[in-house]
Length: 458
Ligand code: UGA
Image (cartoon, rainbow, N blue to C red; front, side, top):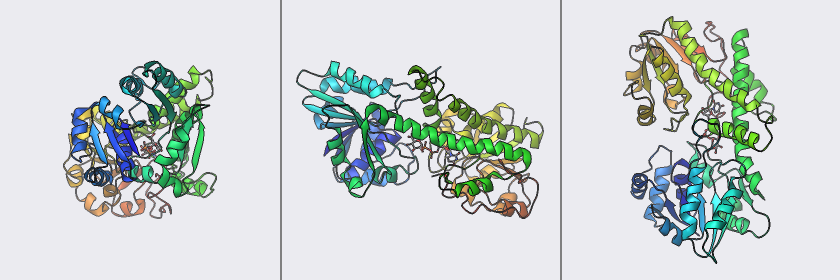
């Protein structure tokens, strides 16, 4: 099939490359000339494991190209995906849908014949219906444009796998005549033939599925982080507690990783936009609990700053190393990153903060230029009076505590993700704090959680 993918950020670039990988002919479209130029040359403008290979392979095979021209996009094919961003509006919780609207405004007047536009961006419920009305006004006489919604569930760091082998495919379309299901069956023939669950529904349900999924994940993380606050006060261990409740398959261990909480370009803004939209559609009270989910999440960042102060006394001039800047490992995305938020707050409080992240440094520097960015893990640790593990990269999880102890000035560490083998670190002479655990009270028999650290965050 021939198709365009409009917007070439994390979502769009991955979708374009993976649709080509499935055998389709794909044109990626973006208004950002520099991004398009990079992609044309096989360069992914962000870090996503496995994506550069898929991109290069499909450009070489002639199935994948990129353009800034909407005229070219309109002439290329009859199926168009929208993958542009819907960030949080300035001064409001609501999502800013101006970029999806701009796609309709720029594309639709140039279309001829019968076209299907499949939205993938995360939007407030009701957006697809409004875009249909907008498209109907802009379409040339004799041209038909149908808007359907096909939400995306990919996780950064696993984007290629999640797109090629999704765990479900959801299509929402209008009542009456629609080509969306038939077209989606063709687009996703490969995953569907492998048994991927396929949910065909109305537009509103499809829009809500996406925000509900993210709101649920955020709630799960904040739930365990709320319990973690209680654990801290009574000397219980939240990681063991999570293992124990996680064995109940109605609960499940995934996303019960207590620590610094969630960040990124999706979960934080999606729960806020969902709350805002619920109010607009008259369900004001339905989602007020998400405000608490957000507050619990933010308190974890503050807790690490408070803990640092408790341990060091005044923060002024103290050398603190923050390991991690990306909002999660295997990503260079620093949007609403808990790691960077902590680094920034400590720096504002007067500490001399040094940051190291295997991939996120370039983006972190753009957001907070005046932190001290280290060239390597070793460089980051040298002379630290406090080390904070804020993003659970393998490089940090596998760090040798004896080696690290030889570099720092003070063997004091806050494990903000509860991923280090505490007993090993204590044996190497470290005083170690785990959020929601009484690990700082030296206890040589602290167990390592059996399902710990590797799989539950994915
Ligand atoms: C999230 C969803 O997981 C995807 O399904 C969705 O498609 C995507 O948003 C989106 O809307 O585009 P992503 O933002 O890549 O994906 O990140 P997650 O893997 O969900 O992690 C979010 C945050 O939660 C990270 O900061 C992570 O460190 C944190 N987290 C995750 C925890 O604090 N504890 C956990 O147990 C799991």
